[in-house]
Length: 136
View 1: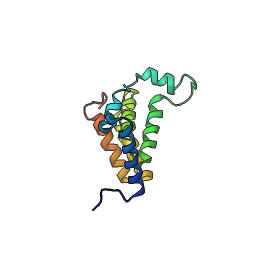
View 2: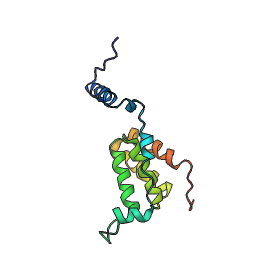
View 3: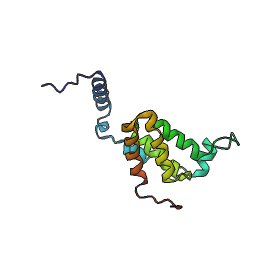
View 4: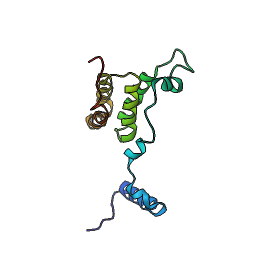
């Protein structure tokens, strides 16, 4: 049996990986989790300045924006692991409670399906596992 992928998507991914290895052999050991370390959690005030009330004083706050982002990432199938984990981290920093994060992801099961919801919850749990809610 051949190791050559028969699925067009798998073939495209293999070609991209081979090309990345040819350009930079270090890419063979690349980890998205390592990339996450390059982007620390922003303080809530910075998030409010960039995404919240600085430009639109009556607009959505950073916490709400991040919960909406998490909902969107879940609807996309929770395929962007680093983005989901990062959004959960930032939402917690912006004041979201674990329950709000779980409800946001759970609500998306209606739109994205149970597998997407389950994957997003697994990723969120990686971030929330060692953090405690102050009001629970």
